[in-house]
Length: 532
Image 1 (tube, one colour):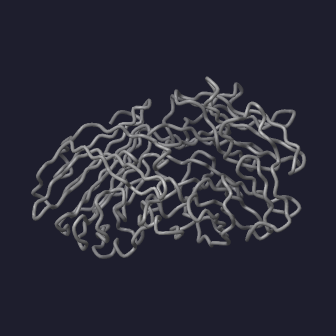
Image 2 (cartoon, rainbow, N blue to C red; image 1 turned 135 degrees about the vertical axis):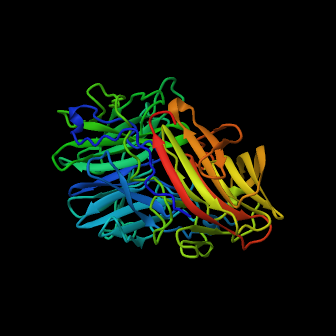
Image 3 (tube, rainbow, N blue to C red; image 1 turned 90 degrees about the horizontal axis):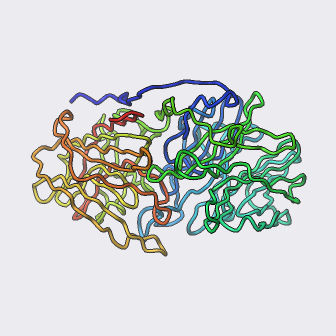
C-alpha cells in the first residue's frame, strides 16, 4: 500500500513577514487561529518560548518556540501524564476541563521553569525545570495549589508567585515550596469597577516597577467587554495603582483579555492576549505594547484596537498541527491523548508505518474510552482525513473519527458479529458534577451504512468562519470519491464540560470484550483561508 505523504497541508498563501509590530499590522489576527489559551511567554536569546493550557490532554503543557512572536512551533511538552488519581485515567470519573491550567514560564540563570496547578483533586501545583526548552523537563516540586500563578525572580534573589486575585506568596529560592515566614499577603483590594472576574495573573518587573496584568470581566455591567487591566507599584507589596490597558471589541467576537507582555531583543515590546472564539476555542491575538511617558504598558495600535490586516492570510499553523503517516519512531508533537493513555494499548512497531490502536477496556461510550488521539481543529477552515484498516476489529468494537468536544459529531465504524457498519451520530455528554463522571450520552443517529470493505477513509471538515462553527462529515472507500454523510454538527465551546476548543479525535474502543485493534495508516490535515 502506498503511504499517504505527510506533506499534504494546503496553504492558500504563506506570508513570512518579520517587520516590527510598530510598523503596522503586517500580519492577521488571531495570530494562532486555534485553541492556545492562557499563554505565558518568556524570551531567551533570539527566541520566544510559550506555554499554554491543555488541561486533561496528555502529554501536557506544550512548549512552543518562535523567532518573531508570529510563527510558532511546538518543541516539547512539560509532562507526559498526571498521576494524581484514577480520574486522569478515565476511571471513577473524568478530568475533563481540569488538569493543567494556566501556567507560567520563566528563564532564569540558564534554566527554564514552568509553574502550573492541576485544577482538581488533590489540588497541588507542579514546578518543572529544564536546561533546554525542548526537554527533557524534570519535576522539581509539588507546591500548594495557587490559582493562575505567575512567577517572578526578583533582582535580590527572592522568588515570588502572584496568583488568584491580587495575592502574593514568597517561595523558597529553589522553588521547592512556599518560604516559611516569607511574604504572603493580599497586595490590593478590588475597586468599585472590578466586581466581576479578575484573574489570569502575569507579572513583570520593568524599570524598577512591578507590573501585574490581569483579565477583567464583569457581566453585570451592560456593554462591558472583557478587558486587560494592569496594577503597578514601586514596591512588590504595594501600594498598587490600576489602569485599563486594553478594552476593545475584535472581529465580531467580543473583547480580548488574558495573556502577557514580553520584550524583544531590540527593545521592542509585544502583547499576546487571547479571545474566546466559540467552537474553535480560545485564540491568541498579537499586538504592540507601547510604554507611555508615565510608564504604563498600553496594548493595541495607536487607537487601542487589535491590529489586523485582513488582506493577508492567517499565519501557517503547520508548526503546531499537521499530517502524520506514522512512519516515525514516536508520535508527532502534534498529537495529545484524551487523558492518560494506556501505553500497552498502542504501538508504532506492531505494524511498521501504522499506528495500531488496541482495545484495553470495555466501555459504553466515546467520552470514557481510553487512548483517543487528538489534534486541535483550526480556523477559519480545516479538514482532517484518516485512513483505517479494520481487519483486527472484534465483535462490539467501535472505531472512527470525531469532531470531539462536549457535544461531538462522530463517524463510527461498528462491528457487530461479522458485519461492519458506518454510523454518523451527534453525541452530547452529560456530566455528574462531583467527579465529572459521564452520567449519560444523548446520541442522535443520523445515518447507518453497511460496509463490505476493511479499509475505509473518514473525513471531518471544520468551518469556523464568522462564528459558523460547523463540522461536516464524509467517507470514502478508495480515498478519491467522497460521500457526504449525516447533517452538519454545531461545535460548541462549553466551560462547564471540556472547557476547550474542538478537536479531531481518532478512537477505538470495545463495548463487549477487549483484544481487537485497528491500524491507522495516515492522518491528513489541511487548512486554508478560502472555501474548500
